[in-house]
Image (cartoon, rainbow over all chains, first blue to last red; front, side, top):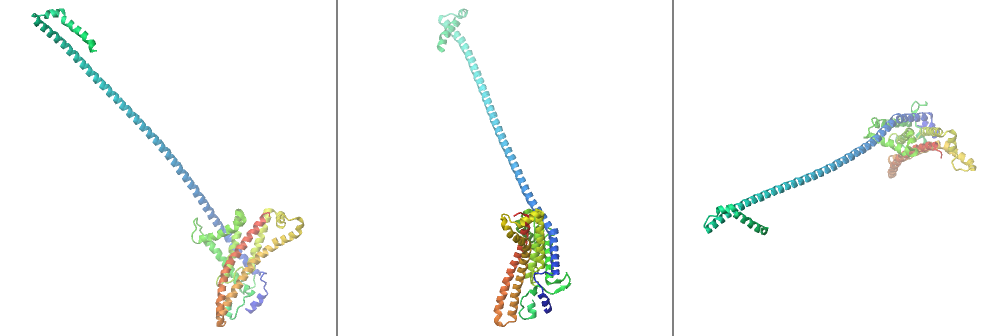
Amino acid sequence: MNSQTVIAAGNNVLLPATYDIVWSTVCLVIIGLVFWKKVLPLFQKVLAERTEKIEGGIAKAEAAQAEAQRTLEQYKAQLAEARAEAARIRDDARAEGQRIVDEMREQAQAESNRIVAQGQAALAAQKAQIVAELRADLGRVAVDLAGRVVGESLEDEARRRGTVDRFLDELDAVSAPAAK
Amino acid sequence: MLAASEGGFHKPSIDEFFPGALLFAGTPFEINRIMLIRLVMTVVVAAFFLIAMRRPKLVPRGVQNLGEYALDFVRVHIAEEVMGRENGRRFLPLLTTFFFLVWACNLAGVIPLFNIAGSAVVGLPLVLSVVTYVVFNYAGIKSQGFGRYLKNQLIPSGVPVYMLPLVLPIELVSTFILRPFTLTVRLLANMMAGHLMLVLFFSATSFLLFEATALFKPVGVLSFAMGFVFTLFELLVQFLQAYIFTMLTAVYIDLAMHEH
């Protein structure tokens, strides 16, 4: 220790020994090579990959969002189209229904008119028949009555002369304006 | 350490920084305690980062996290902050090497059994300062050309001509002579002083607790407490000096590459 102290006492802390420089340089070179050749390239690579991954992820998310937006719009458009289609079909159906109802009503009306007309015609025919029968009966009864009153048969005469018919026609002519 | 074996109060001295040779005595490859400490710290740093980044994953785990955190500190807070993105990337290997080599060697000052910083002997600070000197001059000349680089370094813009005889020598000395010198001495002196303080407090503690009279034992406790506090302080100084050394290297290179 004493001899060491004597040697050391001659040392200047600012003047490096050769071995001091040598080993400092060795340490510097070792650490320098490790960082320069190995550690930092790996680090930079991983940083670059990470950046790319993050940016890629963002781009992917944006693409997905755009896709979702597009799908939503498509869906909305389809929905609107479907709604319009449904409304159109409903309107068509309503119109069709209305048309059918109208047609049916028309047919029913025509049918009823026809039935009424037929009834009236039948009625008129019956009336005419009854009037004709009554007229014939009335003539005969009147002639019979007149024959019995007069005492002789007027039948042939009356027939021949058409008296009764004439009388009834006159009666018609008189009563017809009144009936109207 | 020595105090306990020899007895008596071990007074810290300059001799601490010139321990006896362990191997190859007298050759340029002489290895003493401090050289050995440097080499061990070098291996530790290299091994740590090689292990941390041996198979770097996109999502870092465990030791890779720690390694990336450390590398990012130099990358973001020194290289890119001082030199910008592009130049920061270019000089990142140099700055990273400086920071971790200096810090690791500094840290040895508080690591038990090492107890002295690898940077407390002039060789390491000097070699690093010389590298800084060479690199900033090279970068300056390369980016501006020799003449313009010299002009920009020596003649600050806006200085009137009649002041040049005064300014020029000052700039010359401060840029080309004092820079490497202050860089070396700042780190060296901090580490030496830190070591001397720790030796002082802990050898005093040892002496007062085990060899002095009982009356002094409380003072020994106080001395130990001071030693502990100074150890924490040293941890801060060690980090700070590594940071300052690297930061100044970056600043010098950056200044050399730009007109100012």
